[in-house]
Image (cartoon, rainbow, N blue to C red; front, top):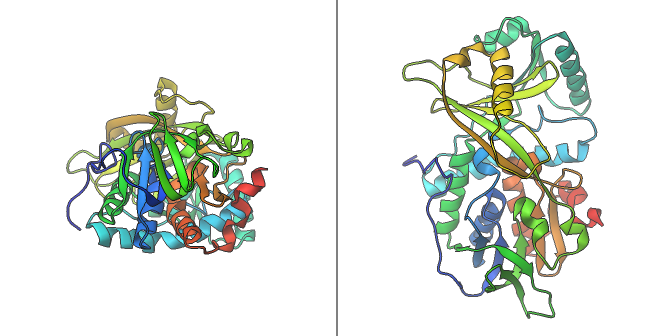
Length: 394
């Protein structure tokens, strides 16, 4: 690998002249979903324009990069689990192609997730979840307290036990987003700064088209809506789509090991602390990410209570993080949907939606890019996508 991108923005600089000419595809949204679709579509020989007000993402820069279909599986989400397993199986190959195309690292890690329980009640809950996951055929190795500390010696003595999910991965979300942007630009994707205001109907345009907030119109053969939670704010869509998406606020912390200090974690740790979930995700460069809160709100303000709660719960299971340097607290907006599953598919000929990925946007980005690039070529997505078409919202 060669250089690293700017980690502050999560995107390498890129621009395109306003009013870029007609393309085969115009994509609203330059987050990981929209940019991954753009890259894969361009590799199929299509001309692609991406429109976004910030040329970025409201969710990705503040994500932790967990790719955790096993440790995140819960009761009642079996369809989503099958899709997540498809996605995580695709991700390593996708990331390798991305690194080869750009010379940038994505920070992919494959050691799995260690789920731990702080007290007996937490352990009982974790055991119930583990039994459910085993019924679904997921690999999960139960560990007693000593087994957990054999894997992670800095865990608190109070930790009752845990489960190792070896099928989970993690990626450096900011490096991954930056590499996607560079790969798309190298493949010829044009980026236009602007906010998608309305999709033009077939009667208003002979081709697919998006009208921007400043009244510019960008035409293409197909429009793809991948604007995260803002997808529902684009005009010209069915009511089932406009009411389907919402912002879900999440707050996250970043710590860093001081120079010369050995890593305090080697696995992603997902902990239950007195009924509350907290996760800790280590990076190879010495960063440690702690997350995340979840609130049905649309602001991006970092609150003192969230910082306190995240640090308190994280230090309850890993006291050694008190020696790390506090570097960042940020808030972002996840794209929730009506049922918290992604919405991917054709709304009508020439109009595709790919949004509502909620907390799984990074993990689902490669599989979503495959599905939409296939739709653009007249191919049917994998069967795992069938429960997640826009038709279910009607």
